[in-house]
Image (tube, rainbow, N blue to C red):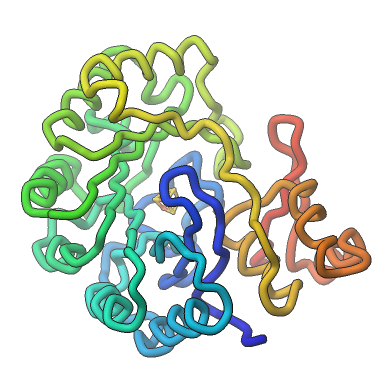
Length: 316
Ligand code: SF4
């Protein structure tokens, strides 16, 4: 069984079904350092687009996985440990993947680089693009997303609108609600009015359900969540709004070396300990032993959040 460096999963996703993830960015290289980020604080805050990995390597892993390991994949998804559009070759990668496998391609982006024409063009061949819209006011944006100082919110919002006007695939939005930060009725109204003008296929509302970068990034109480949902549904229509208020279901199967599989997965998705054990016990005799070994090697940690234990990747 080959070992994969850039593809992981597939994971079951509410939005995308069975999604094969592509990690095209070095760990925590991002234009934002969101207070709720499940990967911790951004280590490399950058807005410079660069070539990180060989596109041939990324594309050949995707085609190897789908053609020789498991073809039951609904989407091939760029969902890295950072902002995928910092990869200057993403347009080329999307085009090459489309040639080599007949699967739809999704890109989950924070949208902060959509003010650039080259970035908007790079995304045109994707089948689904998810853009992050957490704030419409400068103050809230800076507090929640903690952007690179070279970014301007007004430019980003203009870029998102331009992209929405030219993109022929499914455009979806994702708004993470962080209690007391972007949950005021005024902020929510601005957000939903902006989203309505984009005419997205779906607007997703999410809440922090995994250990966040900052402990103070908490989900809103249920009544505030319902209030937000109602506002979105009133303006966009119920069919166009969904809550993403639960962690994605766990990994279905282990592929290749179980240790490498677990490390690849938890570097992108902190995983509930109970789910990891349940999936691993299908392929190893002692899943707890395997997890303990990785803890002893300082590769992973187990942390508690909202009374649940999660496995997270350690990088130091
Ligand atoms: S949540 Fe996404 S956009 Fe925000 S810091 Fe983490 S990787 Fe970057």
